[in-house]
Image (tube, rainbow, N blue to C red; front, top):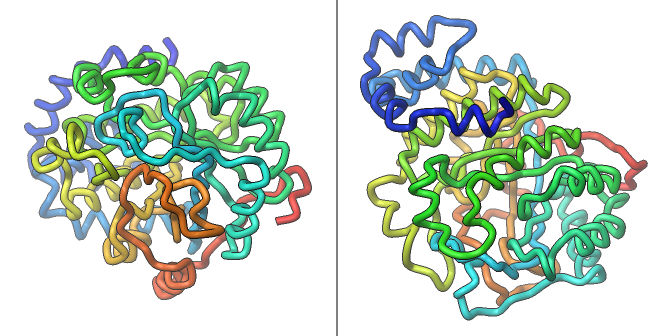
Amino acid sequence: MNVAQTLLAQDLSHLALSINSKTTKDVERALCKTTLQLHDFMALISPAAAPYLDAMAERAYTLTRHRFGNTMQLFVPLYLSNLCANECTYCGFTMSNKLKRTTLTVSDTLTEIQAIKDMGFSQVLLVTGEHETKVGMAYFEKILSAIREKISYLMMEVQPLKQSEYATLKQAGLDAVMVYQETYCPMQYAKFHTRGKKQDFLWRLEATDRIGAAGIDKIGIGALLGLGNWRVDSTMTALHAQLLQQHYWQSRVSISFPRLRSCEGNTTGGNTYANKLLPNEQQLLQLICAHRIFNPYAELSLSTRESARFRDGALPLGITSMSAASQTQPGGYSQPSTALNQFDIDDNRPVEEVVTAIVDKGLEPVWKDWMPFNATA
């Protein structure tokens, strides 16, 4: 079976019951192990583990420093387009929002890249809404051709593509692909995705198999915490990462922890679920530590969705990469923009302040991952 088939075979109701049945003895056993199984991860994210957060944080810190050293990768998202052909009730880009839509031209993108480089960034995540007709492969290839040699590490977060298309983009210089399942529960998924190709749960779930088979250097995954049972979705994310490492060992795996945020022009759907399903900050920190203890080799990423205070506290405890000074609308780096935001951010600090916070924690900011294509960044 491929990764997606194994994930589909999981009994989510059983996982929920198993997590909630974990005891303090289960937590203590997990913390004593050097190699953990999935049931140990479930113990570490269970309610029973809450009193052990200090011990988990200490273990996560030690494992992170041992594997990744005293470093923190810095990257920035570059939103190319907010056009979208999907109806997703939690996202500002949802097609029913009657707000300004923008797609950057090559010239616009080069201006944004220069503004990003002026801030010091050399690792860039290209982001678009999902609109295959106007923002599809022809557009991606044109943008990559224009900017590839100007940056050191190029990532994309766009609609799921075919394996052959991922292979084509790899040849054009693509290093990493982020594709988030949002929630691993098909019934919950259907509630929030009501129109468009994103309704196809399986096509999205199988994307990481196609990315891995195409030989992309890094695969980024994650659940949008707050759409479903966050503990179950996080268990599935942990299993997903483990399976990818086993099946596609040539690719690195990155896990992100996006929590549901309010978004422009949209107050329905996802936000109404947030009060009862959204993990609080202590639970989010518990989750980050649990992922690090379970999977010492996975890269863990934290975005500007979270507050400056939380990010500063969490960054030594498992996190290996952070975004900074993010703009979530096209054209936002080179000039103020009124274009549609995908979601609201919380950490609005300029990059200099984020760097200072990283250094204050005894870590070294890393602006470049590697330098293929003789990049001039």
